[in-house]
Amino acid sequence: MSVTSLPARAQEPPAPPVVQIDSVEPAATTYRCGDIDPTFYPGSVTAVRTGDTSDALTVAYEVSGPAQLFPETFSFAAGSALATIDLLTPYGSDPPIQVTLLDGDLYDLGESASAVLPVDTSGVETDCPPYQPPEVEPRFTG
Image (cartoon, rainbow, N blue to C red; front, side, top):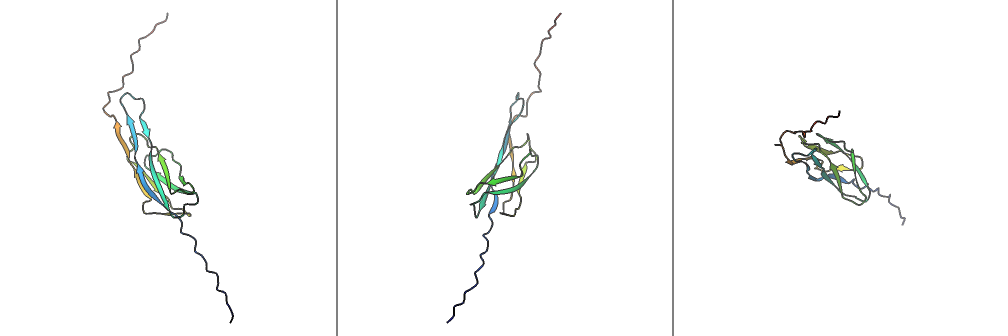
């Protein structure tokens, strides 16, 4: 009886991780009458990845709407399933900012690859009196 060896079975590579947007924290703007400038509070988008999380992973995204300068990528740390993108919006952003994850070679996109980042302007006073510069008494030197 002879023994024949079977060819080695090729293993399929593991499926790439799936990346999608998990949650959105609105940005905010506050302004009180008499303030020199409004105060901006960044909003954030939290992304989640499923599948293999053992390696760090860089994900590309784009921002549309009235956006400040943003990086075009964010990273998941090795071993982490969550990553956060902080986004600063200009005063009175209208329309809100839209964040869209872009497909990549090392990951697939999940169903929720795009989200709108609303801007909370409830802390903005709009009925402020017109600005009046302080009166200055003239000084004469002679």
